[in-house]
Length: 183
Image 1 (cartoon, rainbow, N blue to C red):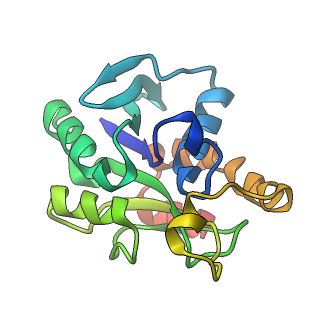
Image 2: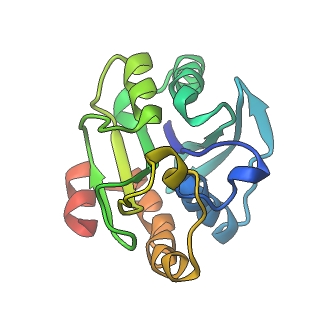
Image 3: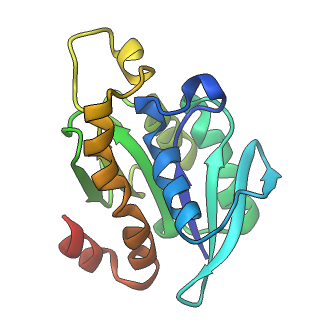
């Protein structure tokens, strides 16, 4: 069983903000395959599906970003999911808008959601898709909670459209082959 998590903040005031790129990416997958997050458990909205013969849980935590690990850990424990079967989709200020990077481990940088995930899972060795949101000279919190301009959204959408293919291949390819294919 695989667990694929899009990170973001719950609530309409955070919709289409830079910090909600993980939600946006997972929503693209849901839209493409006519799925919906129709179940609620452990402060998360999720659905179960089957990808290439493998059971997969698609999850959007419904606590604030800095508490994402609390939610993810409950799913990992309840569904008995191995850390190697987790894929986290999140924003990354160190990557330019319109770019992404697939990694199998790494530190959280300044990302409080990743800090909380690592604290809860007791490891930084979980797989992730980092989606670029670029840096800006304004206050970091204001920036990540700010909305994209129309130009930024156009660049971001080129990445978002690729995410469903990456998710499908995550389930069927080795992670090394996945990184070789998309990085």
